[in-house]
Length: 104
Image (cartoon, rainbow, N blue to C red; front, side, top):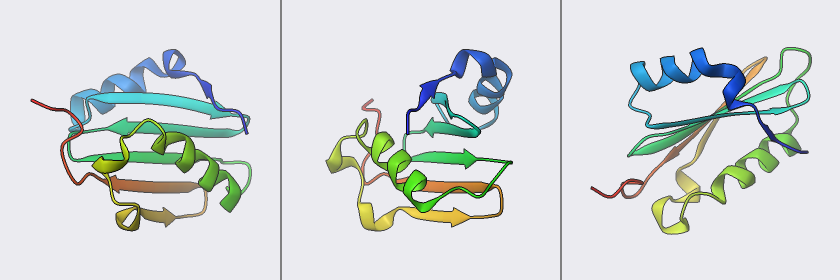
């Protein structure tokens, strides 16, 4: 699976996320019919996976999670604390941080 950065095509979504949440960083990726929204805040990171044409496969969830976790230092999160909520067209992955992602 290849994730393509399409953040520039979702300017309104990115602006709304930054204005209305505690997120300071938002990226949008596409993998065919699957859209991935990644947000980062000081205490957590969130991944939203959406595919309205078919169910998202477990392998896709794992690949996307692995891709995102590469950008977060390992000492900042506990893999056992990651929660995954699966709905019909949407998967939400929450990654609580053990320490702030942003140092003040």
